[in-house]
Every structure is written in C-alpha cells, then in structure tokens.
Image 1: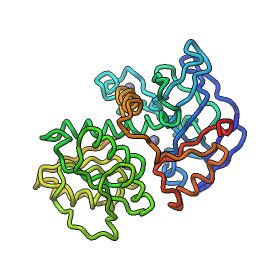
Image 2: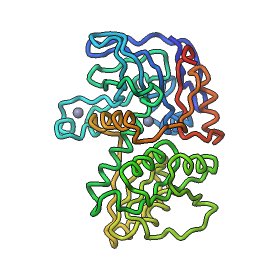
Image 3: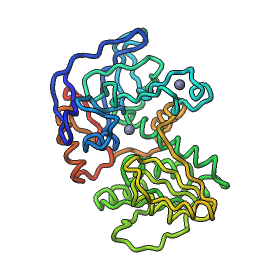
Length: 334
Ligand SMILES: [Zn+2]
Ligand SMILES: [Zn+2]
C-alpha cells in the first residue's frame, strides 16, 4: 500500500509499505480521511520521544471496514487502544489505561491506504456525516472530554462562564465551537499567528486577540481558561488570566517547562486540570455532535491528497496554512 512515512526529523516520505497484518481481534479499514494533529507535527519536529522513525503517523481516521462481519460499513476509529480490564478501564477512565496505545505512536498509524484496529475501537459512522468531517471526531472527543472535566469542577454552568481559549489550532477551534454550541458566548481566543487568528474569528465567532501584539489587561478575569497549546508562554498567560477560584484546563503537550504560578494556585484556589485524550463515550459523543451540526459547517477544514502530505507538514511547520486542520484523503478521491 501507499503510505506517508515519518523517516527523520522534518522528513516525511510518500512510499510503498507492506499492508497491515491482522490479529484475530482486528479489522482492516480503508482510510477515507485522516487529519494532521498537532502531536504529529510535534513528532515531525523530532520533539516526541514516543514516536520513533520510521513510522506511519496519523490517528484521526474515518473510513470503510473491509474485513470481518461489519465489512462494507463506514466507521470512525477510536485510535486509543485500551486493555478493557485494568482498574482505569474498569472505572470509566479508559484514557488512563495501564496499557493504553494510540495508533501512529508505536503502532502504525493512518497516513496510508489501510490501517488496522481492534474491532471494539470502531464507532459507526452515520450516513449523513462525510468522512472528512468524521475524521474530526478524535480531536472533538478531546475537546468534549476537556469541557466535561471543566463542567464538573465549575460552580456555574459552562454557558455562564467567562472563558479564555489559548491557541487557535484545531483543539482551540473545536473547544470554542463546542462552548458556543453549549450556549457560552463570552469567549476570548488567544492566537499569535494572525492568519490563524482571522480564521478562528471568522469561523468560531469568538473574540480573538494576539497576546504578543495586543496589549490588553487580562489578569485574574476568567472563570475558565483552556490552554490548548501547553507551552511555557501559554501556561503563563493562562495562569495569569484565570481568576481566583477559577479553573485552568491544560490540554497541550508543547513542552513541560515553567509557566505555572503555584503560589497563585494555592492562595487563590485555582483548579488545575490535565487532559489526555478521551474515553470511548467521548468519541461517540463527538460523532453525534459533528453529525448534528453542533460544530457548524466546518468549512475551515482543508483537504489535501495523501501523496501531498509532506508539503502539508511543511506548510503547517512554516505557519503558511490558515486552516487549523488539514485532512489527508486518498489520491483516488481527489
Ligand atoms: Zn489528534
Ligand atoms: Zn486498561
């Protein structure tokens, strides 16, 4: 099969790879759409020790099942494989499973014609949802998981909160869109790339500001701050913006250096919540939300042929793409 292989730092090659070999519990999926995630970009930069080249990246997938009893059905993949029996799986926190594995990290991912996955990781894809939009189910599930955790810790309903979203990438866009879908309209989105910022303002309806060039006093004024980048600078902004008694949700994995003010956290009872992936229920909720149109028309999503994937990575790297999400589709579909 043809696949896009991460071969070295800043190097992605479109080449022939062997087809996946199935274990008894797995099915083969013909990939119809597969999104480029911030974590794939992180690997591309050689900054993710968990992703070792050569490796087929990609974990945001929709396609058609072409083996087993559900052959011919369309599906979204829940790419987080869990054991189903450990303490965490057993108590509803499968995202913390002792043996969790995200495809495209050690196991081959979906930037290919075919990908394999345990059949228990499939979510049925409604007729009315396109594969390209369905491939957003995975990042949408992360956004849903983050907002569910924020909701549990907040004293008021999400709709009543003043919220700052840090980062106008796909997770930031999806968090903004979901919040608006939930009836929350007092949202400020921080983005340093002006191309991205314009797109975020247009498509999410959130107020957008550039924390580098726009000098606004945001200190201690947000009930909820969601850092969708996770770098020292964004943590610093998030920590400063959250108000006493407020909640800081941390999703990104950019770096693990500084930015947290532990004195403020303690003296002003700021709740800090880490978010990693989603549960199976979150993925199903994401498919429903996308199908119901809760996230709008998704016209900000760009598609490119799989064979042009290396260019897509390079454009994202250089900040040349206004789109917060590029979805790769098989060349036969373009
Ligand atoms: Zn992702
Ligand atoms: Zn488990």
